[in-house]
Amino acid sequence: EARLEKCILWDDVLIEEKAYLDNCILTHFARIPPKLSITGGVVTHRIPS
Image (cartoon, rainbow, N blue to C red):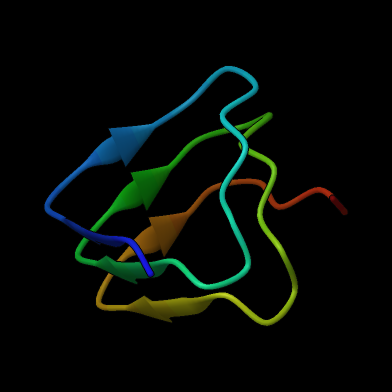
């Protein structure tokens, strides 16, 4: 289980299903699983993984 805090993810980043993102900014092309836990962050574009 990965925990990322205060990060910026972009350009084809692939996030695992069990990751936990806290206060992260996800820009276009970040591939995010539907069940991913995101708190206090910004998702500018979410595409299916």
